[in-house]
Each structure stands twice: as structure tokens, then as C-alpha cells.
Length: 557
View 1: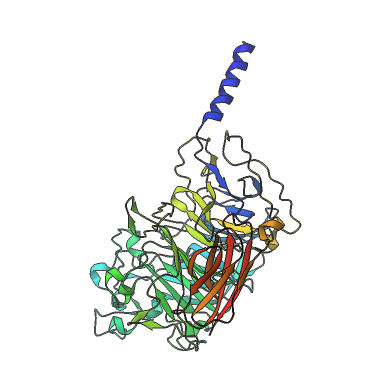
View 2: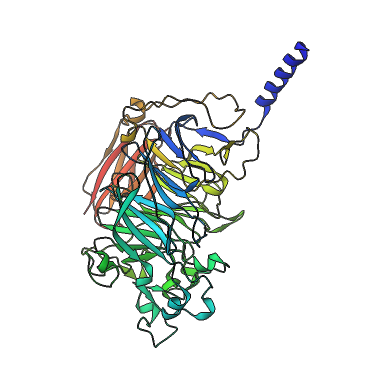
């Protein structure tokens, strides 16, 4: 009997070693940003911090399933939304409750943003002053919808649920004060009923929302009421502006937060002088009848944001475009970066009757040598401090990181189905994630914290030799024998490579957007900047192992 048990144990162990890897850590390259990834599966009451080897270094236990989003704050607390029962609202991304947990796992503050007239959903945004911006559905009864100029054919029995924004000031451990609010319903235009005050020519009012635009939403029931479906909110403290992402409209909107609540309900006031009207919108010009359907960029998009200050591309806009371009293998999702054109007065510019730009600054997905990935729902993207980009392909539970040269440097598949760990080798289904975030090792939340790695999340894991790659002096050492012939320049930059190996280079605008990339052969190399505008540029040169680098600031006159 003992021999049989021992033989069975050996055979089981050998079987585990032969199992193909389907979940957990797939790749950890030295070019990945060392740090900790926050994982909060959509059907689990736990949140986890993982190191780059996929090992748990910290976790929190919660009372409710997530209302989609979870963030780690700089002081080490966890901000999350939670899903609670609703009085009449039941749409995708439903939440209703906001919570803050201490690092040690205590619930420090919890507040329900739910009533018969409104209900929080999807996302929140923590502000520098400690207040919290909240997206909520607002119930507009059918009779008021009709008075707003909506075509009666498209008025659902439940009325409409356009979105609103609260700014909450937390009080005590279970209360909050509403200190500012904005309502989409205050900023509608229509060309259906000329007898109403909000009647107008849609294309002449890009600052307003066309209440009869369906955005291709052919849903039924609650989906008809939640026809706008905002799923992300972001705040830019430098501009004092808020960004909203409407999935069904295929648009990103920017509104002015410097208004009072009264001004936010009007068309005047605030830094921009436009009250709560749209300052900027992008992604689908057909939403304000300023472009054909072919001019639409976004379909089903998530996680619209400004790239934060101090990161490559700071101030640019970033998004996960769920239904990107068609490829040989089908529809592709994308991570997209673009620059909103702003004039010297701080106003967003229009090009050919619609808001610019006319194309992206950068994208990943659906291009040459890009990984094929597609998520019809959820998902997000994040610019990292080393210039890499983290992409959460939410429907598949996959999180991967690409470097600035678009090489895969980290790859991980969520091994949890709800709170239940999958076995290595299992088909990873129902392991979806709303988003995931990487926090660098020097993030303030980690100061003085115990981050010793423990177990991985998957059951029956494959033995791994993964290690956290140190950031050595060599990885940031300078290339030798590299120089510029002259600087400032006019038409071209001349780079002298006195070494013997071919080098990689990338040329960036000062904002972080990449203009061009290529190689530098030994000897003299000419880079033409004749078509580029005057200003400062960043030239980054690496050896092909990316272990050494040089940075030059180019001034074009």
C-alpha cells in the first residue's frame, strides 16, 4: 500500500511538470518595470498585490464584490467601488458603494451612492484634495425625456439614465458631503421638436450632447435606458478638468471642473467660460454630425485618461479601444495615445469642423509585429514610469507589458475564477478583470511595508526559476563614442557613432510623443528634421541589448 501511494505521488508530480502553462506568470523580462501589480478580479471579494514573478506580497479581504474599479493610493490605502443592490437600476458596471481600506485591511470609510434617483457605476477618481469624483446614473422619467426632445420611438419604459458626476468629500467613517456636481442632461441639444428651447442644428453645437444620437446602441431593456454608458472618469489637476469616456457613443469628453455647481448646470462660467458644456470631445465626430461613420475611431472603449505628469507622454491622452481595426485574424483591440490640440489661450482646437487631432500619436494593436489581442468589454491601459505600457486585456484576464520598442517584456494571465484558483493547465475562462495597475517599487505606498513574496495564486503551479531582475548600474550606463556634430540644428541632426555596433534610436517630441525610430550605423548618421516644427526634441539611443543608453536634447531652430 505504501509503495502504491509513493508511486502515485511521483506520477502526480511528474504529471504536474508536464502540464502546459496556461495561467499565472508567462514572461518576466529585465526590461519590465519592477514593481507590484494590483489585481482585483471582477467576481472576487479579495484584492491582491503581486510582484513581477506573480507572487502575492499583500492582499485585502472585502465584504462586497467590486463595483469594477480598485486603486492603491499613495498613502497605502485601497480605494474601491463595491456592488450593492439597487432600487431600479441594473446595468453593466453597477456599483453603488465606495470604500477605503487601510493597508492592514480595516474598512476606514464606506459610503453608499445609491437612491431611487441615482446609482454609482464603473469608476471613481481620487483627487489631490482627498475628495472623490463619482460617475452615477441619473433617472430621467419618460415624461421629462419627451420634454427634452427625445424621439418618442426611442423612449424606453424605464426612462433614460444619462450620467452625472458627484464630487464627494468623505466625512467620518460612513458619510460624505456633495461639494460639486455635473449633469449631462443639462447639456443636451436636439433637432426633433422645433417647439422646445433646446432645438438646434446639431453640427453647430459640438459643445452639447445630441439627445437623439443612439451611437449604434441596439440594446433592449436596461441597455436602452443606459444608452450613454460612461465607464471611466479622470481628473487633470493642472487643467482643473474632468475626462469622461462614453462606451456606446464612441467618445471621450472633457468638462470644466473649475465651475460652481450652478455654473456647471449652465453654459457660462468657469475658467473656460463655458459652464458645464463640453470643452473637447474626440473619437466619433458623427455624434455631433461633423463626420461620416468612417471618421469614428473608438468602439466600446474603456479607461480614458491623461498620462500623468512626470511620465513619458505626460499630458497626452490614453485609452483602451476595445473594438479596434480588423486584421487577418479578426477584430483587434488597441492601446491608443493621442494629443488634443490646445491653443495659447488653453482652448481645444477644431480641424475641418471637428475636434482634432486627425490621427493618433501612437497605438499598439493591429499593427505590424503587434500581439493579437481582443477584449469586447472591460479592459484598460497604463503608461509606466520607464516608458513601457501596461495593457489589461480584461475579458481574457491577461495583463501584459510592452516596452517603448513594442517588445513584450511581461505577461501574466489571471489564475482566479472569482475567488477560486485555477489549476495550471486549466482553460482560463471566467477570469476577467476590469483593469489592473502596476505601481513602481518607489511608489510612496510601499515605504516601510512588508513586501516579502509568498505563494502564487494558481493551484498546482509549475516550478519556476523567476527572479526579480535588479536594476544594475550597467542597465543605465552611457554609450561611449556617441556625439552630435552640432546642436541647435536647422534641417538635420548629424549623429556620430564611433563604436562598432549598430544602435537603436527613437526621437520624441518634448511631450513624449514618438516621431520616428530607427538605427544608427557606425560612422556618421544624418536624421532629417526638415518637416518637423521648431522646438525641443529628445533623442534616445540604445544598444540593441538595451543595457546602455544615451539621451540628447535637440533644439530645432
